[in-house]
Structure formats: structure tokens, C-alpha cells
Amino acid sequence: MSELVNLPVIDFTPFLAGDEVGQQQVAEAIYQACHEVGFMYLTNHGVEPKAIACAFEQSCAFFALSAAAKQDLAWSDAVSNRGYVGLERERLDQARPGDLKEAFNVGKEAAGAESLALALNRWPSELPMFKETLYSFFEDCAAAATQIFRAFAIALSLPESYLVEQHQAQEFTLRLLHYPALRALPRPGQIRAGAHSDYGTLTLLFQEQVGGLEVQSASGEWLAAPAIADAILVNTGDLMQRWSNDVFRSTRHRVALPQGEAAQRDRYSIAFFCQPDAKAEIACLPSCCSDTPPRYEPITSGTYLLSRLQATY
Image (tube, rainbow, N blue to C red; front, side):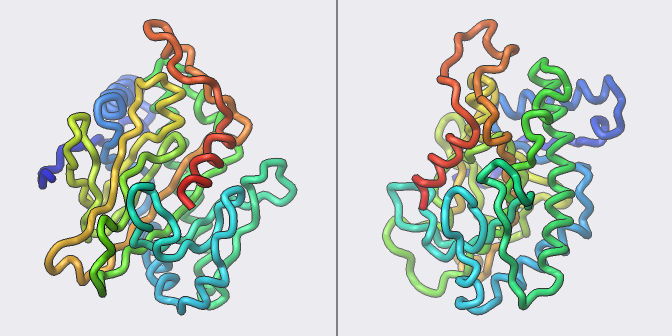
């Protein structure tokens, strides 16, 4: 694995400032990053450092709860995709043992919603600030994602609101992740998170300083993707690749086993997964079919997500 950071770093300031020339330049940089790599670091993204720090504080408190308290909130089905996911419960790489991580998933609540993906969350009674903090952070991430979708649309020569309109229900997942320190030898082939691509259109990843995330280059090399101060790591997922007819890449990534002193340290990260509305049809975007015929059959967002979740649990 290369120890170099070879992923693009893009300053989002000109886009948020609303300057048309600056927005076009940012969109072009994003196009290049998503087309060639599928990953990029975004600085000045609009999510306040204090909000990120509070979310990590609540995440650490949650994973420090007893196993019984966490299991009371256990993930139960792929339709709701909410709640606690225990160690080795998820297997992102089907060729390997279960992942050495635990997680907690939160979605947007909408009583009476038609979409089955919008279910009620369950919250730990032991942490009085947990719900309020995570809901606020969810909204911060959704606001940032909306701006990035506007940039994506400009990059793909679409109306600026095109992708935002396909995510109106905000069927997003905020996921807290904890990779415990290694107390025993893993099983053969077992790592912290198996190699996989994300399922939706866009993922925002917040990392602390304990490394381990690796991104696979086009040549198959695994590149380190460490935390960069005040930057979000952004990547495109499977539905964005299908939608754009492979113009934007959905890139495989993994969390490898730590080595040396790092093996004795816990790793925390927070992911915000963006999924189009469940009934949205993912068919080749008009601007992505002029030179290359559509490579994928149309599929609804909800059908694709459910198939991927059922395969990994």
C-alpha cells in the first residue's frame, strides 16, 4: 500500500460564495475527481468543527455503553436499516469473515411516510444529548450534501436543482462507526471493513486521526486516505456511477488492520450516506448518453439499496 495521499483536495469556498465563475471552476475540479478517482477531500464545506466534535463525543459515549444496552437497539432488517450493528454482524467483502467494527445507524424520521425506508429511530436512554446532537448533525450533513449535489449537477451539465430534486425525502443514513482496538488475533482474512463500494450517490466521511482507510486506485493499488484537518472525505457510490453511465466512479475502499502501536487504539469515524428517493428511477442521465449508450438497465433507488443491504447482513 502506498503511504502517499494521492486523493484530490478541493476548496468548496467559491461554490458556497455563489460566484458563477468560481462555482464552475469548483464543479470542474469535482468532475475530474469523481471521474478519475471517485474520492476527494472537500475543505470549507460548511459543517462546523464544533458540530463534528460533538457528534464524535456522542459516538464515543454510545459505543462505551454495555453490550446489553447497545443490543437493545439492534439493527433488525434491511428495510428500516436503523439501529445498532454489532461486531462481525456485517460482512462487506463476502470472501472474508465479518468486519471488525460496530455501528449505529440513524435515519430521518417521518411519521406516516409512504416510503418503507423512513422508519422511527430507537435511542439510548442512557445518553440524554444523543438524539438532539445526532439530529442536528444529520441536518448539517444534509445541508452540505445538498450543495455538493448542486455542484455535481453543474459538473454533469444538468439543471442545477436536478439531483437535489431526486433526494427530496432525504432517505439518508447517518452512521457512527467504531473499530475496537485489537485484543486478540483476527481470524484469517479478517479486517476492520472489507473492500466494497458504497451503494448510493454520495457519501460524506468524517475521520479522526487513527488511520486505516484505503482507497483502491484504477490500477488496483491501495492508497491511504487519512484524516485531513477540517476536511470531509467525499466519495461517489454505485447509483451515481449507474446514473452517470460510468462518468463518475464508484470506487472500492476498505479499512485495513492497524499495525504496531495503532493496533491498541480504537478508531472512530462517522459516515453520511446519501440515497435518492426510494421510487426515483436510476436511468442514464441525459447528459451522459450522447457518446456512449446506456450501460445499465434502469432500477429504482429503493430496490437497489435493499438488494445490497440483504447481501451484506
